Each structure stands twice: as C-alpha cells, then as structure tokens.
Image (cartoon, rainbow, N blue to C red; front, side):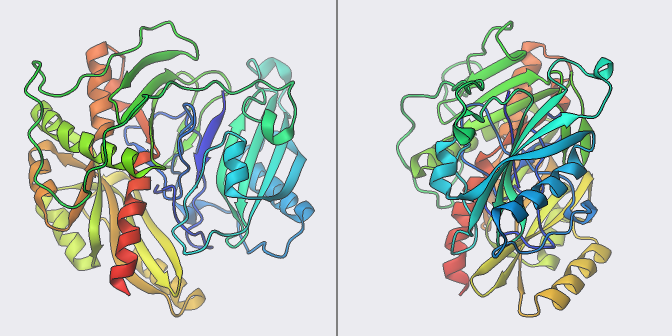
Length: 443
C-alpha cells in the first residue's frame, strides 16, 4: 500500500515553506485522537491522503534553498532528510530530476496547491531503502522501503512525500512495469451542483430517516487491506482500515504502530463543485454532531484574519481545547504558514514563549514579514458550542467530518472508534480557497 504525506502540518495542501515552517509529512497509517489536516496538501488520489506532522521546531533537519542545486545534490539532501525518519534503512537514489505538478499528477500522486502566487520549482526524488535490521526481526516487506519526495526548491524541503514497502505507486515514476500498480478507489459519478461559499445560515437537515441526515453505506468487513469500514456521503468518502505490517509513523508528533486503526477522507478538492459539495455536507451534518453530544473535533476556517488577542478571547469564550493554530505571515508575494502545535490541547492556543520564538525568528530572517493573524484552527469543542461558533460572522467554515466518521464506526462496533486518527486533505484545500480570496482583500 502506498502511503502519502503532504507537508502540517496544516494542513491544503497549500503553504510556501521556509526554515521556520517546513512541515514534514507523516504517513497515513496512524492512530491518534485528532485528525490530520495538511497545509500544503495534494488532491486525493485513490485512498491516499495527506497528513500533518509534528512541530517544525522539533525537526533537526536544517533546510536551505536548493534552486541552484543539481539533481545529484538534491538526491543527497533527500537521503539526509529520509535518514532522520527511517534510521534503520540505508538509502540509495533511484531517480532525481526536475518535475512539474502536472507530471507529479501523472505519477498517480495527486496534485498540490501552493499559497504563494507562483508555484515553486520542483524536483522529484525516488529512494530505495534496505533495512539494517536482522531479518528475523522484520515482518513481511519490512526489509525494503520505497520513498518518493517532491522537493520545493525554494524552501529546500519536501512538499509531498510517499512511502511503500513493495514499490506500489512507483511504477509510473520509475517507468518500471514490474512494480505493483496502485488500485483506484471508487468515486461518485456526480457531485452536487456548486453553491455559494458565502456565510449562510446552517440549513435544516433532511427530515427523512430517523437520523435526519444522509447515512453512509458501510462496506462489509473482510475486504482487502484490512479495511474495517467505509462510507460514501456523495461529496466525500471515507475508508477506515487497520495499519498493516511495516506501516505506522508519526502523526502530529504521535508515534503509531501496526494494528492501529486510521481513516482516510477523500473528496474532489481540486474542483469548485467538489469543494462546495463538501462545505454543504458539513453544514448538514453539523446538526447530527450537535445531537450526538459530548466533545467534537473541529477545524475552523476564518473568513478574515484574526488578531492574536481577539483569537485568544474567542477561544476562551467558547471553551475550546486547541491542538493546532495557524497564523499567516505575508512578505510581498510570499505567504508563510506559522503553525503552533499543542498535541494535548490547550486553552492558551498561542503561548507567549512560542510567539516570541516565532517573532524573533521572523525579525532575524524576514524583517519585512507582516503577521496577518490566525486563519485556521483545529480544536476540540463542546458540541453545545458548535451552532454558536458556526454563526460567528468571521467564521467561514467548520469541518466536522472526523467526528461524523467516528460516530459511524462506533455504530459499526469498531473497537476504539472514538479515538482513531482521521486524515483529510479536503478541509485544508478549502481553507486555501477561502484564504486566496483574503489575499486580494488584505492588500
């Protein structure tokens, strides 16, 4: 199985990277009670999803621009980057060359959006790793690891990366038909017609059926890839599965292992129709999440930037436990993501010491950078607060899909369903659409 990770760490799929905010990617095979939303996420392909990772300050890899570097030099950087994530593998370069977003999409790896005005120059590198561990300690396929990286040469870091224990998903990029082909996931033949993304009252849910909302048809157990559940909500789909041998990784700073359950979300995030359908579905499902009660994980996208002080006050007013806050820095035509990650949730989403670190770094390295404020936040909220949050005039969109999926899997009897990780490329892609409009308004 091919595992994709696009550079979070919120989250999309969409930010220009720099030394401060290089967002490494974790594998989709992860288990964590918070969802993963990429900030520079690719369009979903098959069942692959992009996810965020740990705090960039914790990553010891020191990036630098690679614009004038040769393919051989970028290949060596890829080895250095990968050796920190897979220290038990000896890596060799199979391919290193310049590429484009269209070519990357042709590999079957999806597309990607960048929040900068221009798309940075890209280079694709494919590595093959051989495990240094004694074979008797390796499970099936654990002796080999294929790694594909798409480097943003401006930032000097991978903006997307992929892994596979058997080369699945690498046949096209390596032009090697002997490698396993990547299975395609089913997609609806049509999506809802486009609707306005402007702030609207939350529509009343459908009145048909006891749950008053569309209920996904779950795939029976026993399907390939250890799948334990799946559903199609029209505008988006999910697949839940058990992490297999050789899977696992790091999601939001949490190490995961084979045997954990994770769910992937896919939508048509590269089309306006798909985005509008996803937003509409969330508005309809919000009432279901409120009715379920308890705590819910939400991703809130603001319609305009929030100042640090007003954001803190808003978090306190709604009693949110924030896990990820994303501020936007603007320097000319370059837009930099400045994430603040709190894996255990906090009522102080922007601690003074962290803000001082960010501000001091920017002052030294980007003296003309302007901190525009917060544009996206992921948090746990009391469901009693959700309708009030959605009604705020500065809230553009609330993503409740992770909570809906957990509710579905609880009903299906999946063990530990309330705590599983949910990886989604969709919400981040939508935040990009919203914020792209903000750029013009803020000039």
